[in-house]
Length: 147
Image (cartoon, rainbow, N blue to C red; front, side, top):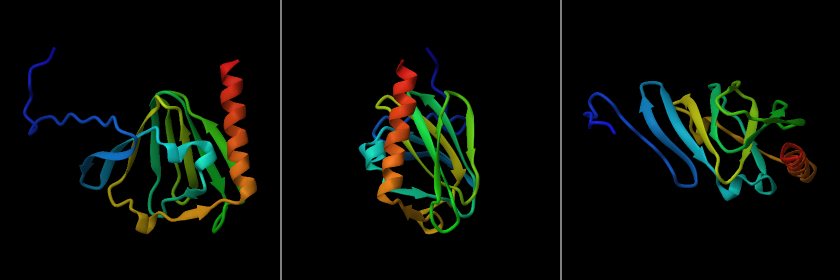
């Protein structure tokens, strides 16, 4: 049990719906939550995104998440998969292509610059072979994990 505290002293936020939602904006930074979403199923990932002005930090709070990292400047030339571990800090460097796939029970904490927008965060479409690679990597990582 806790006693109520004025929002002048403490903000308490949560987000339980599907997808991405900023929950705290302050000065130059933002904290957001990313929950499971159908568009992030490995078979539905059609592009990777990058942030041209900032790094982006991810922390897996529960469930499973694979962080896909794309190498390349103007287009994705290779894709890597990082099976995230709970409570570890993953810092995707500025201008690195990335996306994720999440289990239905996943909750991911995101810390980013507050001015991270679609204007400075382009997407790169994936080829059919790259999309298949993402699906294959997901199956391998999560099936191997379940054994």
